[in-house]
Image 1 (cartoon, one colour):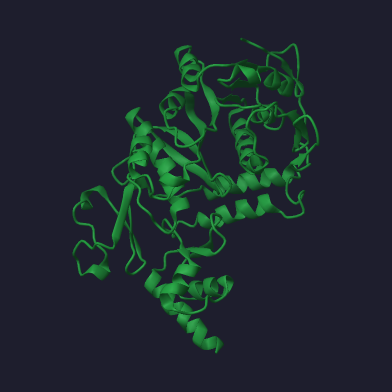
Image 2 (cartoon, helix red, strand yellow; image 1 turned 120 degrees about the vertical axis):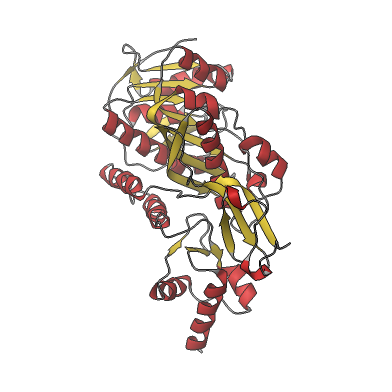
Length: 408
């Protein structure tokens, strides 16, 4: 089924996501739409905001924007890419034909009939992407908002993406990221994941690592532009840029270890397999060292790119419209997390207090003390009661105890 309508440009609206009672109608950033019985989460509006900002930046760079929304549901993402990112063309696909009229009606609220700015299809996601690939009809931006840990779409998406294009992928598999289904994560993303105190960050690294593997098989490499975790679901969303050429030998694709005895974390390369240990285990392999991988061990975000996103959000008057500045706070936290001195993971303050047998000092006080000693420190967007830092757990406890003595 091929349906096309023309686009009438609109400047992004400033209203925040809110509910319109009755008939399944919602309003998101000023755009009214019908959910039509399709799965829809209001809480996921932030992820859609980030995607729209990124798509708009991609158009500013390229001068044009073709978007594929491979699992579009009711079509709200597709409609927002048309209206707010001013996409030149959007392919909205959902395998459930029952949503067809809803998708068409929602896109029709954005576009007039004559100019063929979008098409609706009802195919399996891999099929629709493969069809476009065979036709050599490539996209600047592909959004795959899948459920669970279905990674079967990744190779088709990479094949259908233009060089320099953006891939926005999703996982909602909190069990695998928590290390509770290691064989499942191995099958889906090629990573054997074990329980770690920063499991939700592991979920992002597991997802990126899966794309790294698929891209390398096809002769490409990827660059993460931002990585977003939301507790509802949970939802792991990462935006990646596709680049020509495989990664070189020092690529950020290896193993992450956490020692449950001392609380320290370590990164291990492939040539250290069989020789992994923690310093607290006297140079032998310790039973307390739990290793996961291979995973992405490099940066989760690109600070300059996030700054451009924040500037655009301010230009569109998206900042402060909910009275909480939640989008601004999120992006600023991600920028802070982009400090190149910061390694993977974070230290949970409750875990530190339990190990040190002390009350937890205020988070800001701890961060200031760490920075005075020359350590990098940032809050985490993943959990509010944690600090990302290049300080070891051992030194972290020492600093916290010093602060406690000062306060007595």
